[in-house]
Amino acid sequence: MKISATSCFRNFLPSHFVPNITFGHPMVECLRKSLGPDPFFDMHMMVSRPEQWVKPMAAAGANQYTFHLEATSNPGNLIKEIQQSGMKVGLAIKPGTTVEMLAPWANQIDMALVMTVEPGFGGQKFIEDMMSKVALLREQFPSLDIEVDGGVGPDTIYKCAEAGANMIVSGSAVIGSDDPRSVIALLRTVVAEAIQKRTLDR
Image (cartoon, rainbow, N blue to C red; front, side):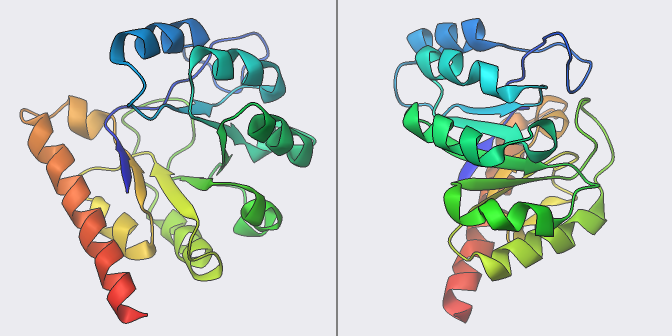
């Protein structure tokens, strides 16, 4: 189980996939130098032409490179390039993209990311209908890491965990809380209990 307490890193570049500004590989390099080798850095690259940032992110110390299926015309080549760079591969889909479009790549990736809001801005309302995608992926690919990102917090984590998500991105719910540690602890506990229940049910 992996939990991210803040939104994943994104680059701000021309021909952008989304319009807001966040972190690029220089920030990742700085964080890696400051925090050492232990933290797991999953780069959620909501950018056009994600191919161009694989090598810089790998050199900066990223562990996993997550790109959007909608942002590339050749997912297979990009998956290979990420793997050859020494990073794990994450593949993300927006709410309007079906699981069927992701499924052909599922056995080649380490993590599938189901966006539960339209990508680009924090604080959006959780789209509950996306849980059917998570459940379908979990049924078809039992060992695949499945992440959800968008509107995830204490009120929605139970639905995410029950559907089969084992990686959680929570930004606003953690940062906006008076007690962020307790929110993170709740997210971890709910996901861990759901994983244990699925294991016992097999």
